[in-house]
Length: 284
Ligand code: G3H
Ligand code: ZN
Image 1 (cartoon, rainbow, N blue to C red):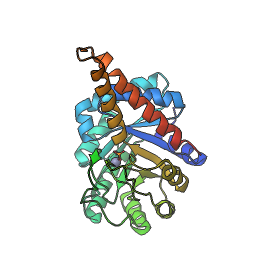
Image 2 (image 1 turned 135 degrees about the horizontal axis):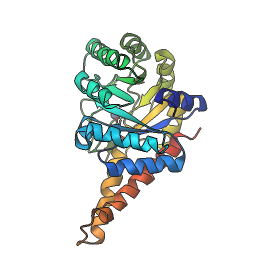
Image 3 (image 1 turned 120 degrees about the vertical axis):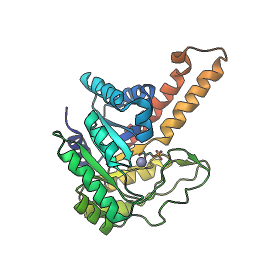
Image 4 (image 1 turned 60 degrees about the vertical axis):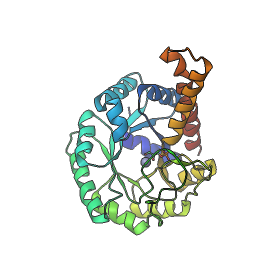
C-alpha cells in the first residue's frame, strides 16, 4: 500500500483532497471504512487525545491494521495532540501521522515543541508525518451558540506559515484560513479565505490541512481544495450523524435493548455523511 505521504501527493496531483474523519469507537470506524470503500478513495481516520483515550490507542491502531490487511487504504492520525509525550505514545503505537498542536503557544514555543515532535518522528524507524498548527480556530467539535471568544481574529499570514514550516520541519501545515472547530447552531457558515490558502501554500511549500470542516459550504470546500488544501478534517458532522441516528434507533422501540439494532441507524448516518464528504473532496 502507498504511504500517507504518497497518497497525499497523488491527491494533489489530481487536484483533489483526502478526507480526515474522527472516531471515538469502532462503530464510527466501521462506518468510515464502508464509506471509503464505496467511494473508492483512501481515507484518514483521526482521533484526538480524548477519542484515543476512549477507544484505546493500541486498540485503534489494531483495527486500522486489520482494515489494511483486508485491502482498505486507511491511514491513522493522532489528531490535536498537546504534549510531546502523547505524540510519542501515538508514534510508538503505530500511527501514520501526528499533529502537534501548539497553536495556543507563542510562535517561538510552538516551533520549539513542534521541532521536538518532528525529531522523534524522524528517529522512529519508519515514516511518520508530523503536522504543525498555527492560528487558533477553537478546540471543540460541537454545536456552538456562538463563535468561541479565544479564536484568532486575524488569519495566518503567508510569512508566518513559511517561517513555522522552515524552523519546525513539519511535513504538513494547518493554518487558520476562516474555518473553526464545531458548527454554529444558527446555521451560519464562516467563509473560507481561498486566496490566502493559495498564498500560504506557495509560501509554506508543504501540503495544507483544513481543520474545522463541519459548517462550511460545498462551494467553499471545492474552492479550498482547488486553492491547495490536501486534507480536510471533519468531526462535528460525524458526531451529529451518530447521535441523531442512535436517537432515532432508540425512539423506534422504547423496549429495544439490542445494541446492534438501536446503534445501526447511527452507523448508517455516519457512513452516509462520510461518503458525501469523501466524494465532495474528490471532485476535481
Ligand atoms: O481535527 C478535527 C477537525 O478539525 C474537525 O472540525 O468538528 O469543525 O468538523 P469540525
Ligand atoms: Zn482540528
